[in-house]
View 1 (cartoon, rainbow, N blue to C red):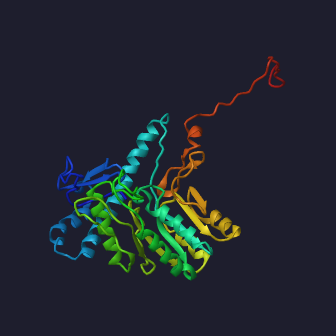
View 2 (cartoon, rainbow, N blue to C red):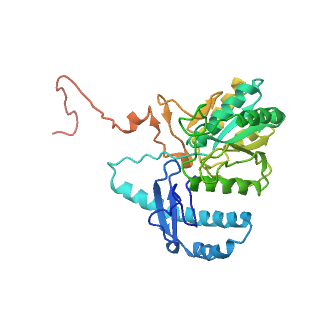
View 3 (cartoon, helix red, strand yellow):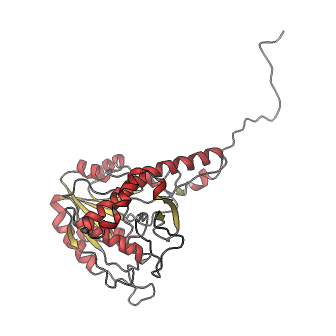
Length: 342
C-alpha cells in the first residue's frame, strides 16, 4: 500500500525524509521507498483543509479515531488523484509514440474449497501470503474459506505460520521472511492491523514486532468476516485477512469485491468448480492449486482495474513493444481500371 501520511514520514535511519514540509502529503513505492507523488494539502480542496485542522487535537484521541481521520484524508487525496491521472493522460495523449505500461499491486484473494489435502492447501496459503514478508504485488491478501472447512484450515495455517523463521538474508537457519522495507512501513502496517482489530476483526495470529527499532514483523492472520465495509487497500506486508463464506457464488463475489484485479487463486474444488471460478473472477492471473506468487514470465503478467492498464509484461511485452506492419504484395504489376474512364 502506498503510504499516505499526515505526519512526518521517517526514513529507515529514523531521519525525516528529505523535502518534507508540514503541509505535504507524500506517496511512496512500498517495496523500494522511492517517492512517487507529493502534493500540498492546501492545494487539494477545502475538505482536506478541514480534516488537516483536526490533526493536532487528534493526537490525544483513541487509535480508531485517528485511523478514521487518516482514512478521510486518503479519500480526499484519492479524489485529487483523478486530477493527477487526467494530467498524465493529457501528456500521454500528446505523445502517441510513447507507450504507457502500469504495473500495479493488488488486494489478491485465495479461495479454499472442498479439498481433503488440508496440509498441502495450507502450505500454498502460507507461501502466497508470507513469502518475502508479503512484499510482492502478487502476494495473497485475502483468504476466502468455505464455512465447513474453516476450523481445519485455520488450525493448520496458524500452526504453519507459527513455524516461520524470520531474519536477515544470510542468517542460519535460512529465514522464510525478511524485514519490511523500513521502520516507517512497519509502523503503518502495525497501525493498519490495530485498525482492523478495532473494526470487528478477530485475531487468529497477532501481528508481532520483536524489536521496535527494526522493521521485522511476524505474520499476522485476522478474521474480518464480521466487518461489512472492509477497506479495499493493498497492505504490503505479512497480514492475511480471512473471510468465511457458505457457497461458491458468495466466494466468487467476495473475491471480486475489490477495485484491483491482479491475481486470484483457487485451492481445491472440482474441475467444474474451477471452470466457474476462472470464468467469473476478475483478475489478470487466475491459478488453480498453485500459489499466487512467482507467475511464469512465459505467460502474460498483468491485471485489470487498479492493477494495470491492459498491457501485461512477461510474454506479452514483445507484442505491445512492437508494432504491426501490413503489406499487400505481388511479384508483377498487373492491374487495370475498369470503370470511371472515358
